[in-house]
Each structure stands twice: as C-alpha cells, then as structure tokens.
Image (cartoon, rainbow, N blue to C red; front, side, top):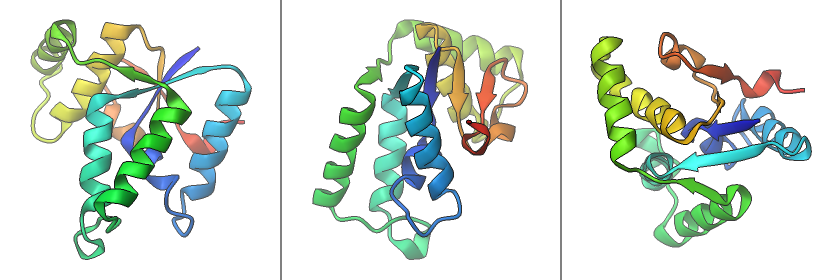
Length: 146
C-alpha cells in the first residue's frame, strides 16, 4: 500500500522531547518494514522548512539553514519518492475545494489530498486526522500503526 507522510510526522521525527516523537519514528519504521511505499509531497517539504527554520518562540524548531538542509536531505533519503506538483494536482484540488466547500487553512490539507488523488496514493499518515475529515481519503494515525 502507498502512504503519503504528512508534515507533522516529518517534524515530530526531529523532536525527541515531543510527545509524538516515538509514535512518528515507530510508525515510519513499521511501514517501511512492511514494505509499504512512503511518499512525501513537495508542499510538505516547504511546510517542513518553514517550521524547522522558524524560531522556537514562534512555534518553530529554530534550526539554522545547514541543519534544516541536512534534515531535508535525510527526509529525501528515507522516503525517496517526492511527488510532483502538476496540472492534474491543481484540477483535483480545485474540484475538492469547491465540492467539499473547503475554506481557510484547510485548502492546504485539500492540496495534499489532491496530490494523493493525482498519484494514486491510498492513505495519509498524520497526527491531524480531523484536518482531513470529509476530504475522502483514508487516514492512518502514527500511534495506531502496529
């Protein structure tokens, strides 16, 4: 099965002191051991960079450019498959936001769903399952991966 890994899972893997750290690391390891194909979206790398380089006082990780670049390189090595943004993604996204009446910040979640639809990805690994409710995709929460 193919799984898109959400930004929050990528971020939690970098924070050993975070409550979700163990679940994020364990879920990724278990899915890889099962032979599942894990994907990341270009949007998730941009979101990751924004949080990773933002100061901790602003709810970021406070990484410098070199550390953030190293973390992105590790993500690319681990997941390998970076799903492209293309016209087909845009068409799926536009249909989703209109049909499902998506507004505000949820438009970015809908865009990840559009990436999944355009590339035939079966499920999403995320700590924020509620953010994807009603968007028509299967959601897998890291803490439930056995």
